[in-house]
Image (tube, rainbow, N blue to C red):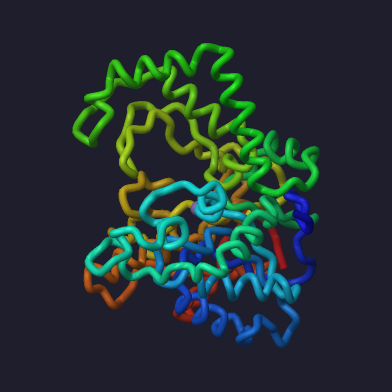
Length: 361
Ligand SMILES: [Mn+2]
């Protein structure tokens, strides 16, 4: 296959609008584009351009419509789009409930009464085009005044990708997986991980098991995350958990590393991924994920010691949960950060002046 962009690519210059994780919420995307002043094809009267931070799909009702819209805007040169972890999982072919609109459209969860019955499934004849699109997306976009990535600015991974050329995201991911599994074998971790899994099988099989921290399992999880450039940039880095915890149907020994607390470069970073709240009152928590940020952190706040990292994911990916509870006043939102203005615009039209720790615009 040809036509892969570099995985570390140059971001549009000039004023841009950086849109958070859309997760199949096509109506919210259309509303946000209107608020930002774009037309149906993604043209802006002042020549502004769009950057999508990744995670276009899954969870929401119309992933195909979102992917089609963004694909067309990218092809027309009006948008850039980063790869997110959900987009990566489609490429890898992982089977989990929120991905079945693409991987396994006949699955019971997509039928009436199922948890994902609200999801429109991929038109079969478009599957190959979506895969080619996700395979070709950059993992990092950069320009002198700004760095853009789905989940983490992780220099070791970015340096590795600069040297990797343009093989496509799936090939990069698979090559890393193979290398990591070989190293785990050589170090004897694979064997010890299997022993831990069988010794603690009863404790690992459900959320009530409370297994102890299993060192080989933990080490294997960390290596599969930190040593795979595609994975660490899209999922964010993990560190050893203080105690095991159960989420998304399995026990985890590794937890999110708050990398932004140690970022001391001067160039600002904008990311998505971390399920931020728009309101600081209770609620709007992502489904069963431990919160990444201080619950009192408002939408104007930038992160890190230099307050130069901004998370633009306001959790619209959990809107399907709100809908299933009969809520119509949504507390999840889709946001865009206007650069260089550093204004947050959400799909309802509310505009927030954010408070970076640097002078911009
Ligand atoms: Mn994500």
